[in-house]
Length: 264
Image 1 (cartoon, one colour):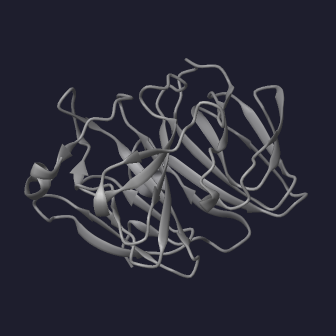
Image 2 (tube, one colour):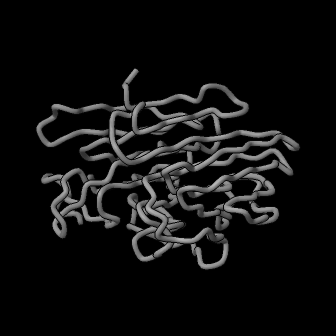
Image 3 (cartoon, one colour):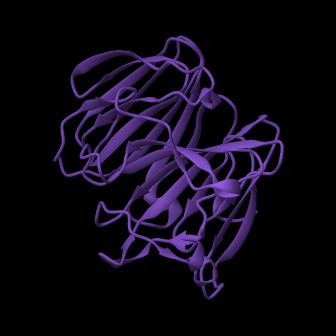
């Protein structure tokens, strides 16, 4: 199995925990909880900022000294409705009590205390189309560059119809050379509909010193430390992924792979 592909630990509790140390990089962290109604989780952000994303289900969230109430609305991620999220700066404590069975993503990156805790969405998040033809996909931007909610984090959701490509034309963001390109590490948390299906993700560099092609299944995570990283959804299987990116500059600038540059 590729060292970039992470299967969930199980089906209950904390099923993913990717840290900069475990991934061999410097910025992005990602963990995932699958909770049953009535269960509780409690963590501290430490020196990292966090965006909690209610992928599915509902939970009562507290954080940074505030009771944020019950967050969450969609019970299945493929409803495609806007997510309920919570931003917490570094130096915060947070807790979640599942009020239904739920899936909670914890997206993290270095924080400098530049932003206050706040709810993100569902207001202000609109599902938008990107691409055309077999490259069509639909985006819920949670905290991208235009949203000044965060110190480091860039977070978005992508829904790829069956038979289509996504994160395509192939592109990379692995050099710190703004404004041409920025260095951003990235994780992909994948979901498939129907859940027993699969998708494809490739991660490769132009010189092919890194060249991995992976079958991704429901709840898998792929780490992208460098290189191009397109995804494909086979006919009959819809793909969702939650992207987390971070690097030394909170800007998303990328360079296309030379063979597909004309498609940009």
